[in-house]
Amino acid sequence: MTVEQILTKLVSFPVLGGDGNLSIIEWIKDYIESFDVTVTLCPNSEGNKASLHCRIGPAVNGGVILSGHTDVVPVEGQPWDTNPFELTDKGDGKLYGRGSCDMKGFIACCLASLPAMLKAGLKKPLYFAFSYDEEIGCLAAPELAQHIHDTYTETPKYAIIGEPSLMEPVVGQKGIYVLETHVNGTAGHSSRIRQEVSAIHEASRLVLWLENKMNSLVDAGRIDDRFSPPHTSLHVGQFNGGIAPNVIADKASFKWDLRTIPMDDAHVIVDEFRTYCRSREKELLELFPDFKIETIEDHWAVPHLDTKEEDEVVDLIKRISGNSNLNTVAFAAEAGQFAQAGFQSIICGPGSIEQAHRANEFIAIDQLHKGCHMLEKLIDEMHSESFS
Image (cartoon, rainbow, N blue to C red):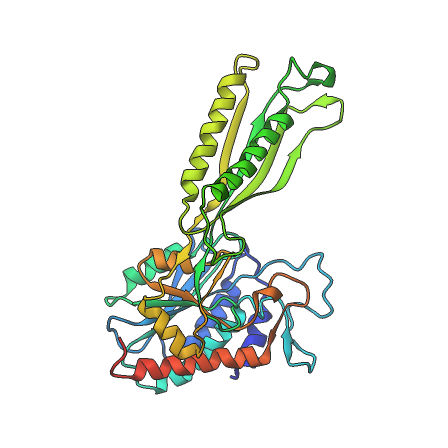
């Protein structure tokens, strides 16, 4: 099958983040196993989702993991010109469809390159590692990386995460931590605002604390110019509370996220926020004994990626991509998790992140072919006696 034919099939699976993904993962498994390659599944506890991994080549240390995710974001409410789950070629050099860019294009490149990998007589192994639920918090990658450690007697050295980067190597990504804060106050007539505790007013103070914290990090010189913006960001994206203008709100909540540069620790910032919340509780408990602020994880923290320019994986990706420009990104990906698991990790894949998550998502055909060419160069590297 050509890379376009494989991508057509992958796009046809409407597997959203959070959905069961066995339909697409079983198709990928069957495809790989048709080449007599053993595939290992890493299922979730409910049995309706699974990651997969496999090894191509000898069981020796020093191989390369090729990683991608099988889920996509929703299309509901977006003004698509075509069926988002039917790969469409309009004759303009682009292939349209949900996930074509983010990031089934890279998976298609991997699968299309499998026959060449098997014929090459690899001296070091290549691994496929395809996950689920990346789009709702990179949920499966830590278990997948650990499963790779537990399954093979040898240890891979590098991981290439094929997020769309226009084939430019990405050595840094921000971490992300998404949380939800709930405030419990008292209901009452708005004329009694001094005698009651408005959950909205208190929640608003917490939102301002988050903004002030972000500004204080900037003022303290917590800057990394590789990123845009070049600092840790704190952002409130949803705020709910109240039933009427003349009723003091007894409930309020907001969802917020942290996107941290490598020098900042999300858990430290969240601990400072919780300390401020405790101080507000202590001040208001005398007025209302049931006043409470609770902050919960919407999903756990995804670690940042901070690959050093002198790391060997950087030289490898420069050679096989033909690109020496090193970039960073503000979006989160599974690369930081693979790095945390002990693999030298880098992001490099076909397509542009500017096309991801939007109506009429596409991948340029020449980008798809560049992705395949990068893997051809990687195969040559893995065939070389000098590869380390």
